[in-house]
Length: 409
Ligand code: FEO
Image (cartoon, rainbow, N blue to C red; front, side):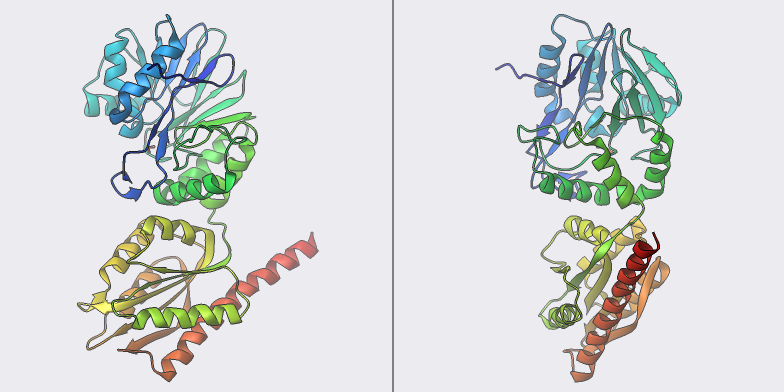
């Protein structure tokens, strides 16, 4: 069966593939809705393939590429990012098109040898350099740590298309629809935020540097290596990445608890109810044993309030809470208010560990802390309500600031 590529315009084809088989991206993050590995073919006077796909999808990918190339040869293979979900098929492309020149920066070239033993027929490009493809061209901009050190994007000046590699990408296979004007935006915005928070968010400062570097470019279309192509409103996805990488948050509270027999869960329910009483409407409660941290992290990235509660397990936090806290620590979350609570049966440990985690991070800590022995007593319930009230108060202060800013402007 011939697999057809999607024609984007008169010189550009989409030759990417969907991965609906892999359960975990990077063997870590759930792919309930799959993921796409996007690759593009520029068919100008010279031909250039922009990135490849994960090796498990190589046969569909090369079939699409052959169909899009027709009887032309492949002149260049541009590697914007070496992570193997995009470079997995590099050796296959070299075998199919032995004369192809592989284009990358100095760091890409090192990785090419270290990952695939490829050392020949390579063209090194530097930041700001342009590759002439005849009637089209590509100008390269290095974007280190978005998502790896060698990451770079390219820009086709005549069409104003940005090939952005991982930046502006998202989870979710492309279900026939590949452009932003064809898709369910709510679904892809959510899956794009999950991708951002799971994969790129740790490098938010570098995302900000990349956005500043690219700010002078007029962009008509964003072609990332995962998720939809943003052709109708490219500014929307750029705005979202800007917002997320500045840790701009919405009013709301995420409560996550680790509980073995329900006592810590009941404490979470008290806090959640009091937040509602205090007029906070975006409240989401997660059982850390039930919801994968990929989804919890994405929600935490969205909302300003975070409340973590844990039972004590072997003198420390509940193991799955430890896992979540390590992920938060790794991501260096900013601009969040944090409250903590927990329980123990003989010797404590969970609340102490949660406090230490909060104090070493960049959190605005709520001073009230509740540590219940076995089950929350009346005094603990008052304390839990106080955590909720302080959280609500801090969030409402932001409402006032926003209102004042609005009136001043
Ligand atoms: Fe999609 Fe960082 O690889």
